[in-house]
Image (tube, rainbow over all chains, first blue to last red; front, side):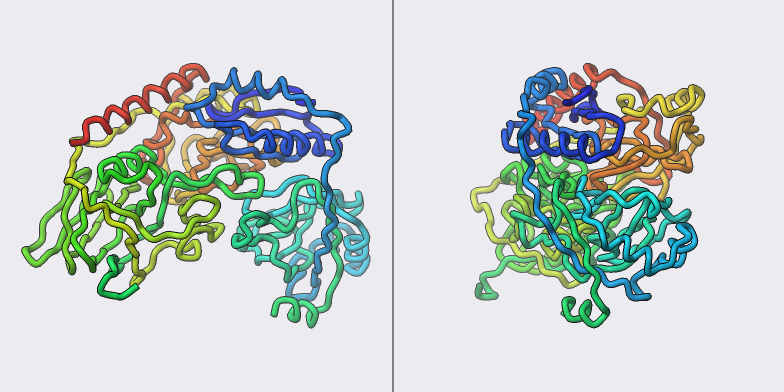
Length: 224
Length: 318
């Protein structure tokens, strides 16, 4: 299922699963990720799954590119290997103070805000990957008529908990960071918890996310 | 702990970016947490060897201006690695210290680390162990994700640095070492090398880039000739590793460093080889950088040589 393995620098394998972004290819990436993780191979220092790539970082004192590439190529993954999928419900408040880009989204999509939010909350989303910053999930897919580009000028600071959309994807800002996604609301729920070392991320690759809308009062209640 | 039994440093001045670091944390990229760890691993290793500590003992890393520390407790030795100017202030007077040499500190003595010279990072530790908490097996502070001791924040004034263990059988040791610099930063061509025009590929290896002030533990931004993208200014976001050189939509290179974001959507023109990483991170803003293309096989060999050189230095400590 890996199409090709290249090197990324001198201490990582770059496993290519294809150029498209869809849940089928991504599920293959995630299967490999969990399988290799379970093998607990000595000298593997990181595994980074994304939409259609898997990066395998290794300790240069233990592996060389060619020897590790051969090992990975020889891994067999059963097609019927089922992914563990959790359904996670996440509250989102779309009060004016949180929906930073709702006007822009209305203008770009030529839809009224209530329709946009109705569409947004009516779907379940698949988690393709987590990262960039700790815990941030990349979710999809939005309906065709909900797709728009990111902001022309990214925000220097996107508030923690912001829920944003761009192209076919949505995400949740687990930390205050710079970013350019169109922000529709904010969740009071903690997405990343460094004190929970065995399971710091609320959302993990392969999970299904259901957003549900809450009022400002409910938001403040949960936050408290 | 009774206060008279405590051994600790009080921070009189924190410095610009002072943190605990060790070798960092593995196998967390998939949840968005980078390796972190000491930026310059050779100087980290030399310091723990000089002090006869475990190879992964916590040290204090500082950048540019270091901390000013006042010591309280029983006699202890300290050592600093990197190219660093510092003073030791005791009842007997003030002396200038040298890196890679161990010094005795008595109750009430101070160490004032003014600055790193023509370099960015320096390291401070003692013949013993700092009292730190571990997060995923590492005490490295990642200020961006707020992970690590001190609530994941850099050191601030008045913080107290606890020492939980002192190695009493320690003998003063030193190393004659002037540090190591490098003319070119060697790289391997990246997975999106063909996204860039032939003339830009040429420029990338022939012309000089300058390190800008927008550089920290996460990344190093460069300026120089604009690199022209002829395919797409973005790729589908995918994993990054330290040393990857991405080209932003504006055509400028940005090099991923130890606290980098784990996923990125800019095309990768090249990756700095592992053997040159320690020397790369020590280049200060305003310095020039020139890239040299090497093969994967050469990079693997150069890394082995670099490790041998480090081990050779360690064997010269006496």
